[in-house]
Image (cartoon, rainbow, N blue to C red; front, side):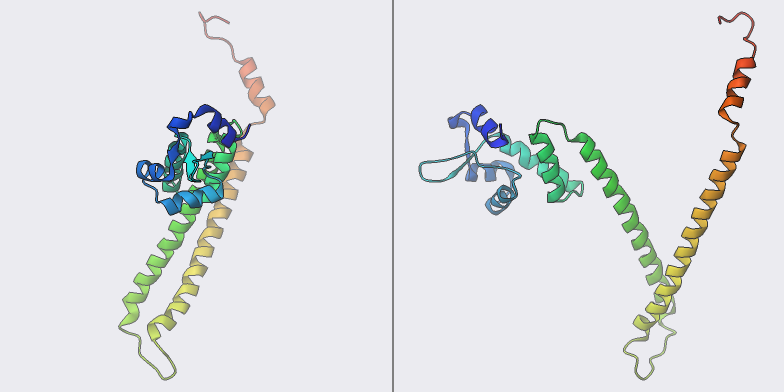
Length: 199
């Protein structure tokens, strides 16, 4: 049974909501409600004799879910996927965790990029007063930014390479210092039990 048919079956006709009621109770504009309906995030399950859309009360829960998911940085495409999982009868929590991990990784990358930009701007402002205008240059500050950007990109790449190499060396050292499983098992097997303890 589709989500639309299921909601139609469980919602008595007198409990159905017109689009104006959905707007006032959800805080979403009519344009937003219609847009979400066009994306399949919500569905009108019936119409009045005059042709007005009627929505199940659970539509309010879905709209609240959309708002909350958006506050976590999820796109409408992400939310559509989650609701599709839910409408199929499954909990979408594992999908949510996967998407949140991706979002966190993306935020970390953006934070690093913004931090580099901040450092670049500070460095540029520190030398801005010493830069001289020369013929053919529109603004030496902006043109100096290109050189500074390349230098900072190179430094960031070197730091990333060094960190990667350091991690590889550390993992190699740990692997070499870890006794083989058989040796560890043998050590434990040969250890005498403490007096007075149960086997």
